[in-house]
Amino acid sequence: MKLKHISHFQNHSNFKLFGLSPDKEEIHSFELTNNNGMKVLLTNYGATVTSLQVPSSYGNLTDIVLGFDNPNSYIESYNLPSAPYFGTTVGRYAGRINKGRFTLNDKTFELAGNNNGNALHGGNIGFGQKIWDVTDLTDQSVTFHLISENLEENYPGELQVFLTYTLTEENELKLEYKATTTEDTVINLTHHSYFNLNGHDSDVLDQEMFIDADKMLETNSDNIPTGKFTALDGHNFDFRTTKNCPASIDNSFVVNSNVEIAAQLFSPKNNLKMSVYTDQPSVHIYVGGNCFNILKGKENVNYTPVSGICFETQNFPDAPNQAHFPNSVLKKGDEYQQTTIYKFENIK
Image (cartoon, rainbow, N blue to C red; front, side, top):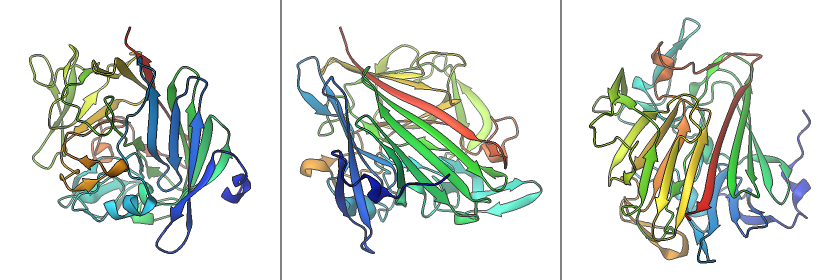
């Protein structure tokens, strides 16, 4: 496939220069709009959502994702003790891999132990720290493209990834991922926006959550799956009955198969709800940590550990080491596909 260089789109009305990388490479931003007034801002640094403005029932636009005003802040955030991954695309493998090691086709691959000796979110330099190319751009969609070289972060195979973001007239942000590889490899891509339906300058503790899951992955003290499952009957994290967001959560919920809506977030204050649709087996819910009470976000806002909540639709963490977990291997000649939709509606 012949790819268009990003400069091909420089005259497009929703294409702008966002800033420069430390080595003076241009980083761009892209604005998607629909006829309802909804706006999404993205950057090709990490194929990242930087702003998601949704009309409330009161008629005003609310920016409901955490982020930064410039690329330098995104770049510097990866130097924090634990990067927040605001709005980014996580790969080559989202979540943790036990001891940074897996075996594929009788060969063992050693990854960076960037999280207490375990591999997390693709390693030291994951997909969120890459400047992606753009292959297609319209008023309502943008397609990002990345080539991950063979043995980058010691993952086998050259991986070609395409990610299309589409803003629909139904106020859906649709994410469609496709990937191919030159050698058998493992893959698990996800989106890492921190959502806050009250606006990115508040907290999520008075928002309510629903998750259509009756079990979650059991994990050890390093948050590595043990291979077992925790039943949610009577558990604090049983969100089949809607309840308020917890102040701290970092767990993978097993999405009930064939459900229409995997998870939902509700803001009584803004009369807004977000529904999460996915074809992935899990949604990883994360609140807490990684904002450190020291991060200055967009509009000079101080972000706290309860400023946002992540709904990371993905395969199970450590699936390459757990034979009974869903398959995480992408074979040469096959295509990885994933679709996730975040839909926004006013509560009647």
